[in-house]
Length: 287
Ligand code: SAM
Ligand code: GLN
Image (tube, rainbow, N blue to C red; front, side):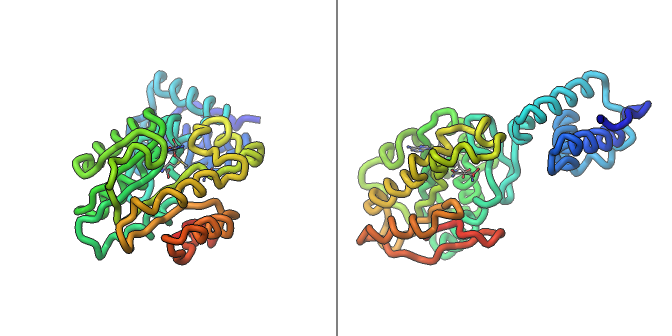
C-alpha cells in the first residue's frame, strides 16, 4: 500500500512520502535515494534540500521526480538517473557506458597515493579507466603526476575525459583507446600501474544484483570464464612497462586473493607485496 498522500506537496512532504514509498518497495537506502533524485530534479545538492523544505516544486518538477522514481523501481541505478556519483574527494559524471565508481575502489586510490607521495613527477598508468574515477583522483591528489588512462571502450573514455576536464586535471592526463597495453607507445615506462579490471566470473553473472547485471556495462564486469582473465594478461604483460622499483596495484574481488597472488608469483620480474584490505576487511588490492 502506498502511504497516504498529503494535501500540499512541499519538498518535505515529497521526501517523506517517497521515502516511505521506496521502503514499501524494498529499497534499502530509501531516504538517501529519495533525496538524491529530488535534488537532481531541483538542480541542487542533497545537502541543500533541508533549506528548501517548505518550497512547493512545480507540477513539471513533480512529474520529473515521479518519472525518476518509476525508473528507479524498474531497476535503474540512481547514479545513472542523476548522472553522477561521488568518489574519493570528487564528483564524477557517469552514464551507462561506465561502471559506477564503488567505494571499495577508494582502497586502491589510498594505497596508490601512499606510494606516489615520496615521488617527484611520477608517471602513472590506469588500465580500464571507465569513468576515470581512479586516474582523475590520482592526478588531482598528486599535483606533479602525469596519468595515462586507457580503456577499450571509446564511450567510457569520453566520460573519463569529461571528468578530467571537470576536475581540472586534463592537462596532466593522456587518454588512449585500445586493449590493455596495446595503445601505449613503445618504450614508455611508469612508476605506478593500477587497474580495477573486469573480474566477475561468467559463471557468477546470474548471482549479481539485478541493478548491476542488467544496467552496468558487461565489458566492465566480464572477467572471462573464471573471472581471472585480465589478471593473467596484465601479470604477463606489465613487466616492460614498469620502471625499476615501480608498483603494480590490482583491485580484486574478495575471493580472488590467492588466485591473483599465484598469477603474480609466476612472473619472475614481479615481487609480491601485501594484499590491502578494504573497509569491510576483505582482501581488495594485490600489490
Ligand atoms: N576504473 C574504473 C573503476 O574503477 O570504476 C572502471 C573499472 S571497470 C571494472 C573495468 C573497465 O575496463 C571498463 O571501463 C571496461 O571498458 C575496461 N575494459 C574492459 N576490457 C578491456 C580491455 N581489453 N582493455 C582495456 N580496458 C578494458
Ligand atoms: N565491484 C563490482 C561488482 O561486483 C565488479 C567490478 C569489477 O568487475 N571490477 O559489482
